[in-house]
Length: 116
Length: 107
Image (cartoon, rainbow over all chains, first blue to last red):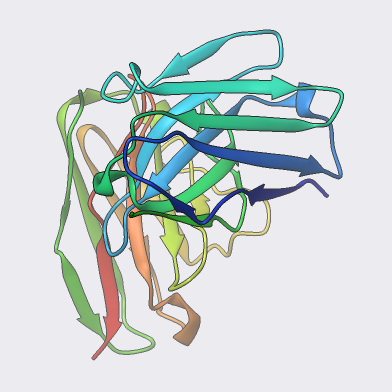
């Protein structure tokens, strides 16, 4: 069965770029749209953006100026870069399958804290 | 942006009781594009309902969803101990937005 696993630094300094990787195992990254979603501590969910391996991408308008999502099909990985981070970007970051539909499979999430 | 407002914020019930959660959209959402998730502490959300009323494979039939337009409901027919959690609605007709969540707690 398909599994997702997020990885990356747990601590990022303000104004720097947050970089995360999501590794897809047990299936092909070409078979689904993939999204990044985040959840600040104790708060709700915020969709960041989605990508399809062919290059179709869509970002949350509120984050669009700072977000880059990409796919490496050779590594079965998708990546997230969020620039100019502030404390408001502190959250658990999830990758999930889905982009044009509901999110039917989620990674376990990775906590990222923005602090100096 | 479509804003989803869930009510109540917290629902206090006993095992075996029926839970009914509401999700109201700021503008009409095709029922095809409304989902519900369950989230337990320290875990990722789990998809329970998509298309307003469809269950993915493996989701028990005590979970059900209904509604159309701007008003949607999610029901747990008989609460099991493992159902006490936070539930989110999600629309994906225009971009993606989530409700703020309803916590179902043990009374």
